[in-house]
Structure formats: C-alpha cells, structure tokens
Image (cartoon, rainbow, N blue to C red; front, side):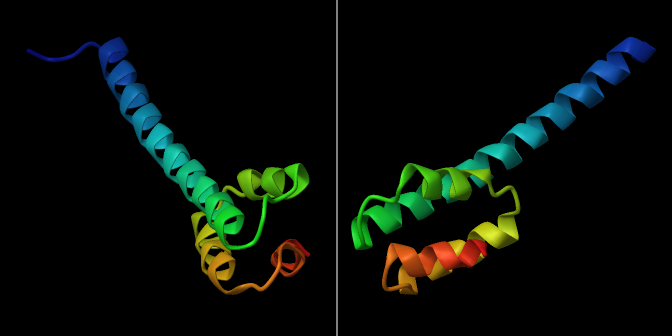
Length: 83
C-alpha cells in the first residue's frame, strides 16, 4: 500500500521536526550545563550572561564554552568568550 503525497509530506515534516527538536534540546541542555558549572565553580552568572549562553545555537561553540567554564578563573574572564 503506497502513501499519498500528503502522507509523505507529513511523515517527512514530522521526522524533520523531531530531528530539529532533538537538536534544539541538545543545544539547550549544553547551555544549561554551562550555566550550572559556572554557578557551582564561581558564582551565579548575571541574567545577561545567562541569556548570552542560552542564545548560542552552535554546538561547537557551546562545547568550547563548556571547556572554558571548567578552566576560567572568573565570570569576567568567561564573558570574554563572547567578545
């Protein structure tokens, strides 16, 4: 039994939507992890710094920030990663 054109597009859109949702969830999880590390290691990041972190959509950049969150000595130093 073959699918109708509408069923094919729905399946494709649903699959694409799930993949995008998974990718978005992963990015948000990494960003939240960075904030948690900064909070535990240093102190509460400002709302502005948290917004900057949450605004990053590149997984590669987030992994760079994650590594930096482990090694930076202050929130000021960490914030230089956005300059």
